[in-house]
Every structure is written in C-alpha cells, then in structure tokens.
Image 1 (cartoon, helix red, strand yellow):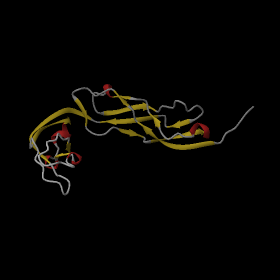
Image 2: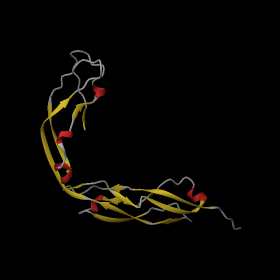
Image 3: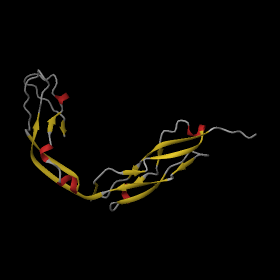
Image 4: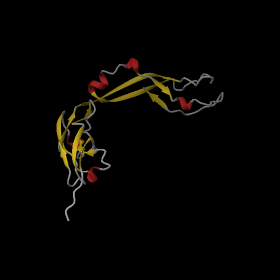
Length: 170
C-alpha cells in the first residue's frame, strides 16, 4: 500500500552547543555568532510536528587558537524524509589574549530598603580581579563599576545584628 501525507515547510532556529574550553591564555572578546540563525525544513507534516529548533554539531572550543570562522553541520537526526536547507552553518569566533586586572579599594555600598536603619559594611572596600579578553578588560569604564550588598541580604535587620551578605557587581 502506498500512502501519502501532506508536506510542510517551516523555518526553525538553529541552536549552538559548545563543548570543551578555550586555551588558558585566550578569552572570547564577543559572543559566538551563528549564521544563519534559522533554516528551512521541508518534509512530511508528521516529521515536522513539534519541531521548534535544530541543533548544530557541538562546537569544540578546544580547537580554537585564533579568531575565525568555523563550519558546523546541522544535526538532522530524526528527520527521515525531510530536507534541511542549508545543511551547514558557520560560527564567527573572536578571541584575544586573556588579561587580568586587579582593582584595589573598590567601595562596597549598602542601600537598605526604605524604612530600614542605615547599615555599616565591613570591609568598606574590596579588591576585585577582572579577567577576560584584553580589550574588554583594559577598556572597561571603571566609573560605571558598582559593588553593593544584595538588597535581600538587608531586609529585616535588627539593630546590632551582624550578618554575612552576598555582594552584587554591576
């Protein structure tokens, strides 16, 4: 017996999966960019039912030694009878040497919720270590850096109470 089924065509986003880690002396200087972002899948409606995304083969960060463009195959497992176009994607990778910057004397702020008493923070300043891609670390505008006690750590404080608190860095 020969049976027919309605055909369908849908556009679905590609999903990037990574594995491994960059070499210790490198850092990403921008997000990984996958192109195209979407592919077209054509085939039997039953094969496409519930399909909301397609992964590309895992990208191994350990193979990256310099910035560049890398080719990845779209994973079509389970799509028998369907056609994917395109079947390949490229990923743009930008890496730079890893840089470390130490900032001393960074003030820690504590802004208690309205109606709560003022809070004294100890230590009043901390040392921060920034690690990342050279241009990102060296060009960071330190006037925008803010270290504060997490607001939820300050609620319902009682006078004289000592509490260990989580810090937020913005």
